[in-house]
Image 1 (tube, one colour):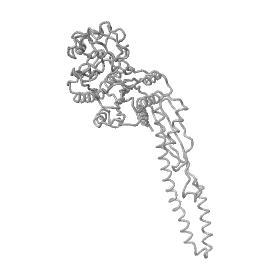
Image 2 (image 1 turned 120 degrees about the vertical axis):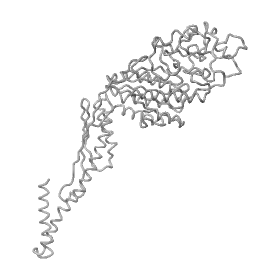
Image 3 (image 1 turned 180 degrees about the vertical axis):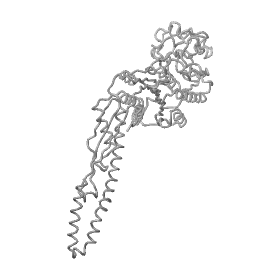
Length: 508
C-alpha cells in the first residue's frame, strides 16, 4: 500500500503543477506548487487519523460482541457443535446490530477441549483515505474463552405454596427451571461433572417414603414425637392402626436449634432424627372452626378441645374418608429429588410440581442445604473442601413467612413446626412466630454461606419489603438477588443464573 500511495502522490503532484501553470509562468508558481505538494501528506495524515479512529471503534465493538457470543457458547456445556455455532452467531448479531459502522463477515468458531475461540473481520469504507486510493479498510478481532473443568452441584429450593397456583406462577416456575436444566445439561443426558437436586417446599418438605429408617425416629424417642397426643404415643403405631392411610413422606422439623443446622442424624441423640408428619384429628366442635376433623372424637361431649384432639383410642382400626384431609394434611408437595445427573428425571419432577399450603422458607432452605452437603441424610454431595467442585443453592419464594393462624385452641394450621399453640417457635403469638421464621431463614442463610456454598435468592412478585430485604441479605452478594420478575422475566433470571454457574472467564 506504501508504494501505491507514493505513486499516487507523485502523480497528484504533477497534476497540481500543471494545474497551477495555467495561472501564470511555471517558474513564478514554484512556491504555490511546493505548498500544494506539501499539503498532500498533511491532508493524508489527517484523513488517516479519522479513518483509523473509526477502525478502532469497529474493533472495540467487534470484541464486545465476540465476548458476549463467547460467554454464551462456553456457558452452554454439552450442546452440539452446530447448536453452539448458531448460538454464537445469534449473540454476536444481537450485540453488533446492522446500524453499527463496519460490515462483519462470517463468524469463525473453533471448539477445543475446554477452550472456545471466536474470530471475525469487518470491512470499513474509508471517509478521507479515498483521495489516495484507499477505499476500504479491514478490521479483525479474536477472543478466547476458557471453560472451567470443575464439577458443579446445584440445588433448587422452590416455593410450591398455594399462592403459586395463581396468575400462572407455578407454570412460569416450571418453564424457568426447565430452561436452567437445558442450559446446564445442553445435549447431554448424564453429564459427568454436573449434579442437580430439587426441594419443593410449602409448610414443610416431603423427603419421600424411601427415606432411610436410620434417619427417622422410629421408636418415638424425640422430644417432640408425642407433642399433640397422650404421652408415650408413637406416630408410626397410629399410622399402622389407620386402615386406608399411610405415611406419605413429609417430616416435622427437628427441635430448635437443630432445625437450623445440618447436624447428621444419630440414633444416640433422638432429637437429631426426624419425626413423621402426622396432622391430628381435630375436635368435633361446631362452635369453633377446625379444618381437619376426620374421625369421631369417641370421648365425652363436654371434654375440652385439647383432650378430644390428644385422645389416641379413636385411631384404633380407623377408616378415614377419602374426602377428608387426614393425617397427611398439608403434605401435598412433591418429594425431594436428591442430586442426580439424570436430566430427564429432573425435568419430570419439575413438571409434576403443584401449588398448595403456606410458606415456611427456613424449612425448604434447611433441606436444600442437607441435600447439597456431603453428610447424611443425603450423601451425593462432594466434600466442602473439594477444590474440583463448586456448590450453589437457588432459593425462590413468592411470599413472606406465614403461620396460617386459626381461631381455635391450636392457633394455626398444622405445619412442619406442628401447631402454634405448642410453642415450637418459642412463642404462641402468630405475628411473633412469623418473625421467628424470618430469623431462622437469616440464620440458615449465614450457615450455608459459611460453608462456601454460592446462594442465589429470588423474590417472585413479592410486595413485602421486609421479605425483599431478607432475601437480598441472604444471597451471597446483592448481585445474586433477583427481585420480583414477571412470569416472562423469570426464565431470563434462571438463564442468567445458569450462565453465571458456568464459572467462565475470558482468557484472552
